[in-house]
Length: 445
Image (cartoon, rainbow, N blue to C red):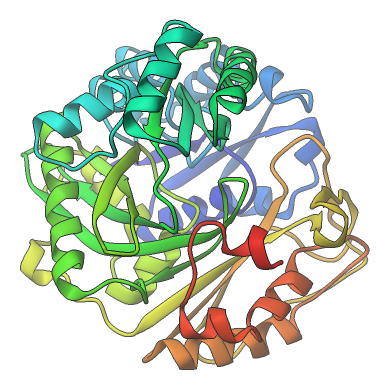
């Protein structure tokens, strides 16, 4: 087992990893930009190193500075969290070549799955259903129009190297396809330095379902059930839950089996998620693989009792999985709400600034993962996530009731947050019934 780990991230995930390491008797090194120098969680680490000014390119995305911090502090491994460098195969390879263990999948698996076109081909080769689409990147408008007319509108335009909803557009006709491809290419080029795009037929009325997987270096692979991530805005998840209220047990089993086939084919190790779209008739289609821990991992931890961060660390240290598939039992239901510093009343405009009052909810079966407190200055440079509230109860209806109460208790003053939106949602009869899809929030709220 490792003696010392560096956490190449910030905010609530940095604190989450610090807590797991402390319980495992592992020392931690936190890195921070000057914008985060007063963050309270830095005091929970055994050592904290400043790696640069606020822009992520000069700090949290600066590989030389992070590796210098790792060498200076003599760590044995780096946990990347999510976002920033978490799915950067080059960073993972440099870590391993520097005799610093990367806590995540191998660079090879990340490259096989990081390109959505190659991941789609891998799915087809391994009998994992995909939505009809182009065989590879579409080279010009004429080729794109031929594919779209063949598979039928509406179609999704997707960046091969995409993520976070960037480089993604919906086209309903020839005109919107041509303009959408141009916009998606430009966005992908700016975000990923790769302007390849491909087409898939849009799955109308779909749920977004992801399956949590864990794999060790001895070839053992398991899944920890599914999470429903359909409550999202512009492809950004806001609420996640497990189990999904909209699929049957047979489909649930098929999703788990398909996720494991995909992971096995990629030679996957450590934690990750295989994501699918599930149509109203419960036919499902492969979407992508997120080769990292997810923001919503607490939902699965609450329903299975498996500490995913600790398992990540054990796997990276070369230990075999402590679980087999038959050991995984999902109990009850759980829902997570992401608390973002955004103003839902004004187009989800970011709301950085000083938190003047902070009081988080409590009670049985409520978990709050957050790094903020009264007096904390939310910086304008990074993702707007400031915390997550997770509720676990025996039934979904009980989760909804408890979450509603918890949201009413949650006090964050001085900035705008997404809490008012969630309070409206948790009083909506359609949501309470579980009658949602990936366009629910944008359609009704």
